Length: 402
Image (cartoon, rainbow, N blue to C red; front, side):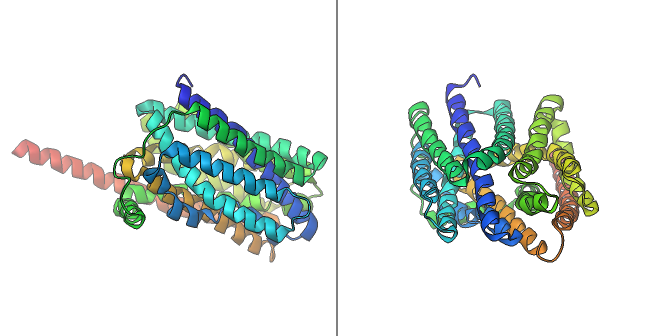
């Protein structure tokens, strides 16, 4: 926080994140009130993630070919306009869905530029601390935005909440334009977009370490499902907008606390060794939804699940520095778009499941899937680390022989 540029970027991020979470509550309430459909609600929630698959792949490279501050300011202004149009009372849900798709698409370019810019501003162990702080901030913003958003939507209505989100994008653009120094595009920015994207994909897919880190990151597609099913779960248990906001806030609350403990209490080597076990622990509490817990117990389970999501900090801290600067924006775009896309797919699957079973059982199914996949990725991580260690030993032995 002593780095002025990082501090200003952090402030811009905080208020924008708060607006985003309030908007997610607003969209869930707006759609569920009109349709009373768990599938429709999960689907509109999925649209806050799913279009990023295309956006990150096609637009993530802008962070490498254009000045990153310019990309961030331009996309913030565009999203402010799109979300403000969603807030117009006469706009039907179908049009809101289209506007939402475009907003998420261009948001992928912002995310790539922002993540790459943080790596430009911070270096070394300070970068890992910065990643941890940003992750804690994201979770706390979700906590406040979801919990406060439930009350705000109940009091003011969903359209006003969407207008608040639009204002937050405009404020973020102003803070970034005035508080972040202008930097040129990274060297190699003149490469063709398709060559740039293919180079990033070859880099990621060609390295086993990067592949398994992506697998751990994309597990979020399983443990995000309770967010998409929070509205029908609250309705099944007689809750309203306030209960919905609390259910959405429980996981971020645990994640915020878990991240602080993960960074402050554990040494770097210990954080590396706990990545796999924490990934498994994230989905275990979701399995217990098979017992159809009451809302207070569900809040506790989601909180515990959030505690273990702190492992995502280690994923980012290992992944980003391993990417060359001239490919970093595109590679982050691919990773981020995949992350958002699997979350969107998970939400759609959750919406389909809730059409054939209770919301609690659908969440439990997501938990079982998360545990199984986390076990697979943990086994792959152990294998990759063992092979890497053996390779280093062989190399050292060869040098000694020479």
